[in-house]
Length: 203
Image (tube, rainbow, N blue to C red):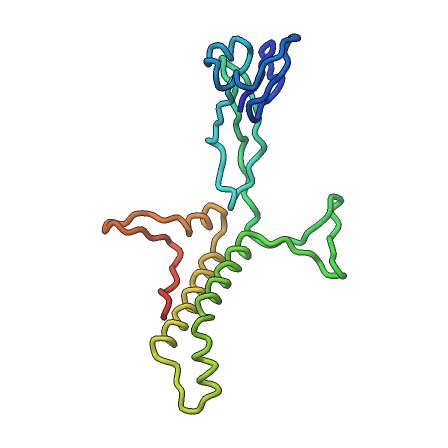
């Protein structure tokens, strides 16, 4: 990305190389690739330097729009301070602060906790589904018993799911929630995270 600077002020942006007219002169798109840095800057064309130091994980934070600035012979694009996404569910309201209803029911905007727990529930359901037939058969066929390894696996899945949801519910800040999913290297060279893992699937 490039910016055109005129009189120390950013006049125009170029998201991709394209021809343009400046002071009555037509410049082709290939000047962005063929001209040297010095030649482009002499014309007022500066490559944008992106500063992502304030940018945070969009799964947990709301980043501000980038602001562009020209100073010390450089054009930089930087983010402002990021905001935490909501941890808890909130009732949706319109711009006047009035409740948003759908078919007479309050619309709820789900927070990070609910969304994370929903993913865990889906994962648990996906892990249990392949062995559901054992339970169905045990209920319908006299004398059939669910294999021990299968029943143990299914119980472990539910236990881990409950443990994860409890840890998520116990978080009081977005940073705490994010840290549950962060893997760190252990002394034995393996990687683990504070949030428990589901057991391996039973074939």
